[in-house]
Amino acid sequence: MTESAILGPLEPVARASVTDQVFEALHAQVLSLALPPGTKLSESDVAKQLGVSRQPVRDAFYRLSKLGFLLIQPQKATLVSKIHTQDVRRARFIRTAIEVDVMRLAADRFGPEDFERLEPNLAAQADAVENGDRTEFHRLDDLFHQMLCESAGVGYVWDVIRENKAHTDRVRYLSLAGGGGSQLAYNDHCAVIHALKQGDAGGAVMAMRKHLGTIEGIIQQLREDNHSWFSEEELGA
Image (cartoon, rainbow, N blue to C red; front, side, top):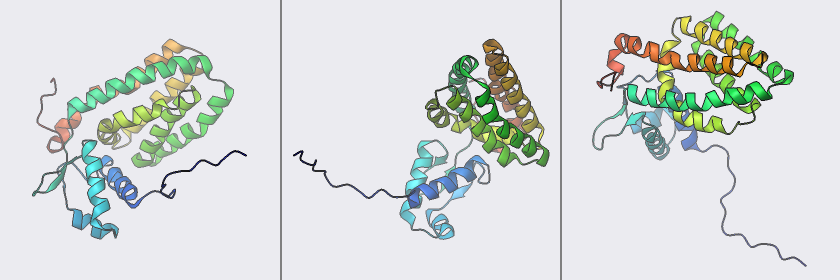
């Protein structure tokens, strides 16, 4: 008779921890600029507002600082970090390198069912543009790119993209203000899908490269319009 394996002490499988929930709440507000760069944050104030103890807030602050979104100063105020153009450019470069290859795979692998799966997302994007809802458009934009990776058979690369794109998200969110940016992004998405339907890998690559490269053309203007939110580094550095 086969003996059962004796396991060491294991923690019960739990739902999202309080720390995770605090992290997600703060993360969303930082990325949406509800907490703009330079905002002072207090562990005690955040804990009070969220109805939690200070420890999960402290842990969430640490995680956000590791992503570069908070500047924790011992014995001083914790600040939402300013946007660094160098970090944005590095993140954009990494993301483009990955998603260009995703387009090559997608052009070869996509079938009718993949396009049918993406149609509701594109329709919802159009509605978000019409309604001027940039928060919803931002969410759908991310989902669109995730679905492209999944349908291309490399869904796992989205985790890499998500980890590296965080620094671009605040700039992307700024660019969606007024609806014009959302319309341009939606048009880019449609161009990507059109090329993929034609089986045109080169066209899909060009469309995706253009889409992700848009941030380079707008970051200087965004910095001029919101100069207090950006670091003092040189744009050309």
